[in-house]
Amino acid sequence: MSTLLHFYNTLIQIARLPVAILSFSGSTDTDHIQSTYRYYTKRHPRYKLIRHKTLGAALIDLELVDTRDKYTTLIKGKNGAAFHAKRARARGYIFSEIDRNKHIDEIHQINISSASRQGRPMDAPYQIKTAYFESLPHFRYFGIINSSGKLVAYANVGLFGNFCGFSQLIGIRNNDGIMHLLMVEIISLLIDQRQVRYIMYDTFFGALPGLRLFKTMLGFRPYRAKYILL
Image 1 (cartoon, rainbow, N blue to C red):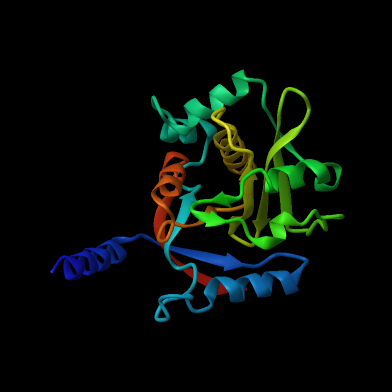
Image 2: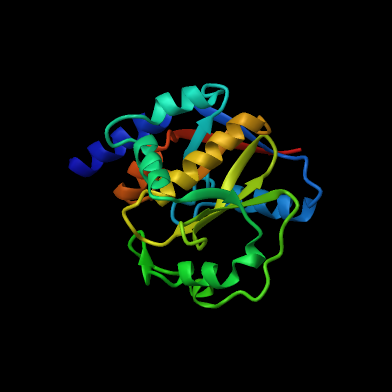
């Protein structure tokens, strides 16, 4: 009975999700855009009746949060993301757009700084030091620099059309709020620049409770995503 009730409640949750139309378009790198579209819309590896990143897509709709002040209001509170980001700034951490090829050693150290994340072993490619990073024209690369000038966290953000998505987001483990600072600054920058309507951070369904909480603290909410290729 409990299993049936859980299934029923899940269906109710899905039915109530707001719908977001996410379009892939406008890039000079059409091959990568098309391959990403295919990846986002392929059959889910476990639930074959649904598409890969459709149900519970973690999104921020920038039509609802269209200024930095509105975003700060959304994420403030005693244990909110704004609090943790402020704490990181006070400890000397700085947000910056980065050239990854100037931080090859630091990126490798970040990648191997923990054997597992979110309850899973780190994927094998993270254990291999990258000799050179190719910068895609529709991607932007950001990082957090500590008071000694060392990169301690980084994120790769793809601008795909009317939305952008995180392809990598990783940092050293500490309690200084560096990941909150990284995310808050990226989202605030995207709000200022008004290039996209939606910011996507993978999905809520399947994420462990700690990661779901992190996404919620940053203002992400679950949506039912529909993708189009223009």
